[in-house]
Figure 1: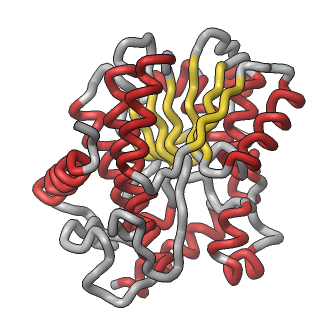
Figure 2 (figure 1 turned 90 degrees about the horizontal axis):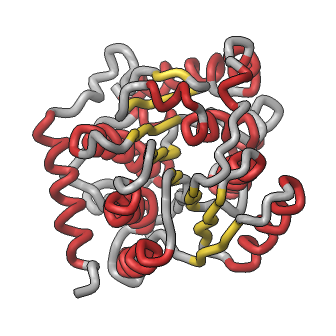
Figure 3 (figure 1 turned 30 degrees about the vertical axis):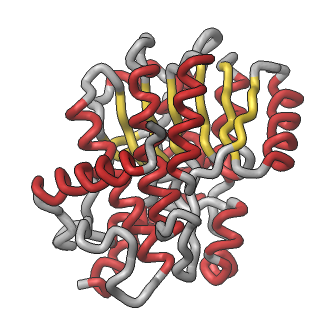
Length: 319
């Protein structure tokens, strides 16, 4: 079954996820969707110092949004801020230094942020793909800690702030790679099988899609979405998937093309009209499962994921 999933997924990717797929899809875009002024609205972009996060933050700033860049590396964050403010002439770009694999640090950051700022839109973009099993200082598998638990805690902690605002939105940058994975709540930290960083990452991205669906049901006043940016040429792809990059580099999307749907989901009026909880690619909701791939999970497993994340997150919440 995994061979079938991977084959179907790769063939789908060659058609839809590459630069040519974006160019084909973009012929049907409505340019007016992004001809908006979001002055007065506040946005947070995690992992905003490079790649898709920086590209999205730049386009949001270009449209007048106040942007909070949440980054792990201060020097790269400062460089990104300078680039964004220079190119957009928008000085309302602010830096926050945070390691998204540090659950206690995320709780503390969110509590302080809630006391000092407003927030209309959260873009969960930060992520990692570590190809050897590595534990954080808290004993958590690093991919899971960053991609899943970190995203869960930050979103959960900021929901009260978002719910105070008009038209609040949460966008999570997932991956089409999640299509090859069925949700597995029995092995969230990749302890029980041979470690494959690419598949662990794909499992994390499946978890993000399930989280988005569950949040949409639990918080109807907030518009939730997840999305696939396509196969884009970003620093993360070059460093984490060098073989894939070398084979596909002439076909990859640009970071701006990968970020297009993030921006559309964050700022356009049309995106807000879509049903909450969906998975998007090139400004369109798309299925979350491949045909005949047997990746659909039970409602019980999806609820168990949320329960496990809630219980684990509470262990790190400052008292």
